[in-house]
Length: 175
Length: 175
DNA sequence: GAAACTGTTCAATATTTTTTGAACAGTCGT
DNA sequence: ACGACTGTTCAAAAAATATTGAACAGTTTC
Image 1 (cartoon, rainbow over the protein chains, first blue to last red):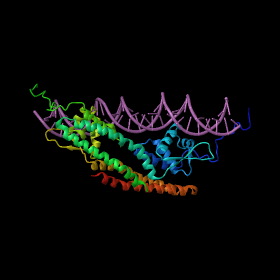
Image 2 (image 1 turned 30 degrees about the horizontal axis):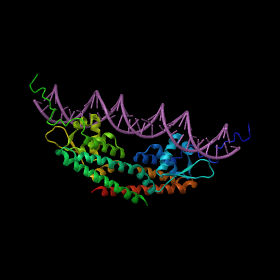
Image 3 (image 1 turned 45 degrees about the horizontal axis):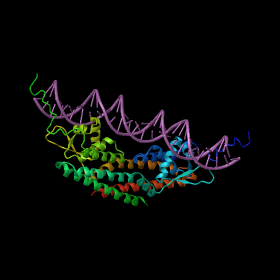
């Protein structure tokens, strides 16, 4: 069964894409790691997006794992998240079996993906919370009632402010 | 030396302010804990602010410790942070030795405090990062240069968008 | 000035979150 | 159908973050 083709490896495709990052890439990755922190996302997600953002060519999961030196698990999860928010696209590369990814670079798309995915659900669940709170407030002992009812009212205006802000934000960021 | 006044405790001032929270307070505290999570602040800070927000009267550090059942350290640090962002005010209560605190409830003040304290510094440090990145980009090998320079340019427009957004945000939220 | 009290700091601890890596399920080519 | 390959999942490990509590410094009262 020892055929001539048996050991022919698929791996070393033309460009090895050197493991490790160039100074430019490092700097870009760091910048996005910082950005990720600001919005409360794990470092690995910042790394992945940063690498894809600065990369000239689409990268495969394995490329990312090697260059960033992170585990396949992290990379897979990170890409999953980034795809789910629309920050990264899989571009079908017909020459290769595996998927390759590129960064979505439109600020509007990025922001709206993030807001829809991360903020909107919280606002919605906040609605339920507020309703419950309101019910407790109106039932409060007379001495406090006025005060707490007024506070809850204020929370309600906060909430609707925030809800109204979302679309405005997206508009402002979108070109 | 056993004087009559020796054991007279200062503690049990008229209203014990029952330790533990009423259902209303609990609900309010929970709501703010969730909010804190959204903006990446520790739970204890959400608890403290939530309690002060719903409270009819200003509370002392010890009140907070007891009612919330958190350590004095946490409460002290949390209050320090909340004061530094202007989310909480010390109102001088002449009847008591210790400071009492109340929540600042103006959305504008809260938002601008938070943005100034948490976001602005990041934007500023981002400036330096961007400059460094740009230097690396223009020095990149010819094959990549155009691409990476263009990406960095885009980052610069993101940055200025964000910088321009801050005052707008404050305006929008402020009444 | 000592005792009682208030509030801060910080090293140790506990908790939460992220990352890893190995097992697995699915695909493709032969 | 088998073997090589790609990507996902998830329990365990590691890392990051928050909380505690005890020591301390500063006040006030007597």
